[in-house]
Figure 1 (cartoon, rainbow, N blue to C red):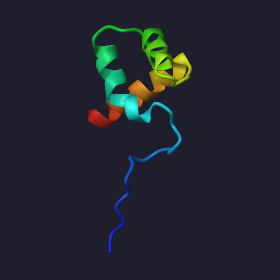
Figure 2 (figure 1 turned 120 degrees about the horizontal axis):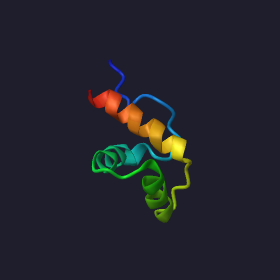
Figure 3 (figure 1 turned 60 degrees about the vertical axis):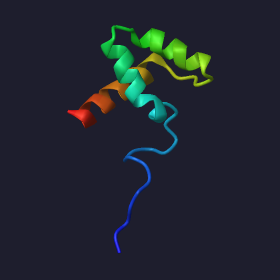
Figure 4 (figure 1 turned 180 degrees about the horizontal axis):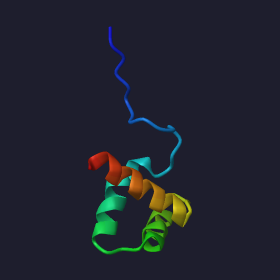
Length: 64
């Protein structure tokens, strides 16, 4: 029997995990981390700019 995790590695409670691909795509399109943070806030996800930077870096490392 092998275990099959449902989520990628890391903390389950990361607020922006579901938006990681979109954050990377927006950053590649030229949006700043502050603009992305404001867009997330409009959705009700309150995070800091450094959180957006960190999630973008993590996602780009996973896809590379």
